[in-house]
Image (cartoon, rainbow, N blue to C red; front, side, top):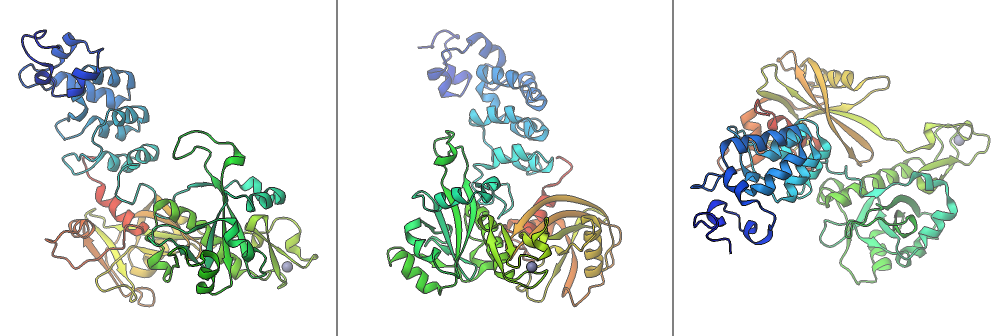
Length: 477
Ligand SMILES: [Zn+2]
């Protein structure tokens, strides 16, 4: 219907975008022609520059207006291969990123240095943007570290409300995750935790060796409909630990109906979960492990009992000092561990070490527990020096990861070395070496052509993410 209004050209020839002709009644044709090279159908250079600049400055109104006039601007790049999405991500402009995504821009495009918009957002620390971009990355890693997702609202204020907890426990919508010897019952796909209802586990709740922990409720905003829900509509989640044998539990709770099993190897089986289930598992397993180890009071040696939905243990001896005031012996512990990617002073090598228990060829970042009264920076410098003999200057926090084996918090840092000679403490690690960036990149990306036998930890580990973060750095960022 538009033929003849632009010197015999169809809009498809001017702008190779079908929806412009069919869906956009508000398109101003003179504007389209002004903005585009009539022969090639691509936007004029000055318009591309204007569009990229607006994206970079976070001017969402201008970006929207230009896109309405010339939709093909969406994937245009500057001389370094940067799209509008990358430029908006670099400066953390959420509204522009959302607009570009809504228009269907390709988030997987890479610039001339091989970085996606998500890489750029991560590098510049714009977590809110990297989460937006990561939602549909589809690489299974997402932008948070594995075990770090928070799919539930912990609702800590309700832990002391015994009547509310009792009511939620019996609610038909409540979800129970069953553990045997700290291993969760897994769905047969091995990627999900087995979700049980109250009827399946109510007998277990009566047993003296069972333990129940309130994990929280599902988030108010429904992930399926997007609507807000009232508190009483939100399914509550619990973890329940039983002293019964795993096979007996499977028979008792499932009646042979479903193919579920208990994880047999925490370090292997618990790394295959979906990101959301890994995020639920982390607090559940850490809490249950704490209960198992703290059955007796560390102040007086008397027995302790679980309280506050499993988030506190109280000493049974009334006169015990731990029952007066607040004591950290009554609450679940988290042990801080620093894990460091040490970069060579020249910038193009990193220091990795291996323990004798690692598979052949595997190297990883150095790590160690933070000691009492120690800063993260001091702990990082001390651990690197003790294990490898290398001295470290600047220490920069990157990200952290809960690690429920049983309850560490892995605090990931990048460090810059000020010395390069290696002297390994063999009681801690077997070997440490400087690895060139190229070799690390090839080991991360895989591929058949790589020559090195270097094997790096899997993507679920923060060591892997620290390495990826280092590789993603480039002058172009
Ligand atoms: Zn006590």
